[in-house]
Image (tube, rainbow over all chains, first blue to last red; front, side, top):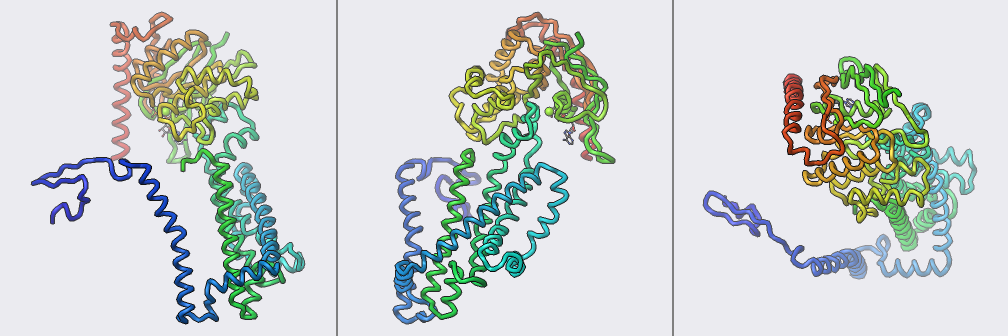
Amino acid sequence: MSINQTAPSVGLRASSGGQVVTRVPGAVETDRVRFARRRRIKDNLLRWGTPVLVLSLWQLTTALGVLDEQFWPAPASVFAKAWETIQSGLLPEHLGVTVQRLLTGYLAGAIAGVALGLIFGTVRSIRVALEPIISALYTVPKLALFPFMLLVFGLGPAPKIIMTALAVFFITCISTSAAVLGVSDAMHEPIRSFGATRMQTFRHLIVPAVLPEIFVALRLGSGTAVLVLIAIEMIQGSDGLGFVIWSSWQVFDTERMYVGIIVAALMGVIFQMGVKAIGRLLVPWKPR
Amino acid sequence: MPDKIQVHGVERVFGTGPAAVAALGPMDLNIRSGEFVCVVGPSGCGKSTLLRVIAGLIPPTAGEVTLQHEDLRTTLMSVVFQDYSIYPWKTVEDNVRLGLDIKGVGKAEAKPMIEGWLQRLGLLNFRSAYPHTLSGGMRQRVSIARAMAVEPEILLMDEPFAALDAQLRLVMQEELLALWQQDRRTVVFVTHNLDEAILLGDRVVVMSSRPGTVIEEFVVPFPRPRSTELRGTKEFAALEAEIWKMLRQEVRDMVLEQERAGA
Ligand SMILES: Nc1ncnc2c1ncn2[C@@H]1O[C@H](COP(=O)(O)OP(=O)(O)OP(=O)(O)O)[C@@H](O)[C@H]1O
Ligand SMILES: [Mg+2]
């Protein structure tokens, strides 16, 4: 076994009994600008080329009859259907309903979760009294509560919005509270030594210290919120993207079903990216 | 007037039961107003704990600390922490302004003071930088500037120059010497560096290994204003040797104890 088989050949010369290890600039260091450009082009090709390739293959296989159009309508017909539903006003209407529910529920849940988490993290007695209940409720499957919500809040939009809020509430509350408790003594000491009030400690220490963790929770919560809302719209009511998907399935309009699925997926992705972008804006001190 | 800082029979134990660690004391130490006292002692002997108790960050488990706050308009004390503890979400300038923000000093009013300190500590060009882009020595300087900016009556410094390179350390020692000779605050300065302790201090307090007590105090006889040239003198070397003789035994004890604990 010679060294050359396992070690990279660049910068390594084997000689009898020993070896010379050299560290030299690589391709990246010798021409940073060109390297960066090449990588950007390659990344973009991969990023946009892959979905295009998948869609083309899909189109091709349905055209050749390999995939059954009944279950796998060709991308072109799905796009045509999407255009049709946009023009008829069906898609904008239902998407609007869902987006509105999502934003209302999500904001309410996130604000309540962060606020309660901050209180838990700071006021010991409230934490001891309430945190076990919150932790226990967190593990209850939220969807199981939906019939109860219908009983209490009726058939209007309220149960859906509340369920969406709950999906993000628990995770932000628990994460925020843990993050506040995780702020180290070493971080507390300087501000305490200056005699800061509780409000000053909040503003200069606690809030900025826990922001990154809050945003991780908010991003996780955004996915769950979309999931819960779409699922509930499928079960009950006659509007929203979930309803579009479910009712299309029931009348076996697969093309419209796909439109609903794709739009719901896009909505989730854009939503999650928005939350992430806001997080970056608010946490400028993090190294990228 | 009573002494500025009176540490009387102070002890600190961490934890309870069989896991309890006696970190400090009983400790007695009196520091006059305007005095510069250096504290040396083996690692883990409770020097940082002593400063935390004086700063009111942790209470003593026995004994009492009494402080004289002479002018209620000024800040009583500020601390330079051993691990700097500067805030990653604040720029250099905002970190240095922290104490003034807490005191409610307006930004405009604080600006000239902050700039003065940034200037003195060689940070002016980095005022808008976030700490993660700074070297360890620069972070340490930010934390020194933060403590200085409130112009406290008492300055507690926990190995403030430990993270600086040897050359910068010399410069900072001179700078601190000059500053202190101007306004004569009360300073408690923890260091591992005997040479630094003698150069800066009116008095050098030697602590025993854990739990730390005062085993010896040396009055530094050299007149003020001092300069770093003092180092070359015979008397300086003699005093350093004398303190080291005292300390060496304690450091040995500490190492032996740790070996026993590890075995
Ligand atoms: N918060 C704490 N909890 C438990 N033990 C502690 C705590 N802080 C300090 N100790 C212990 O108390 C002892 C003294 O610690 P301290 O930090 O005061 O030492 P030191 O003299 O500053 O040491 P060094 O020179 O290494 O900084 C050590 O044994 C340490 O492990
Ligand atoms: Mg220490």
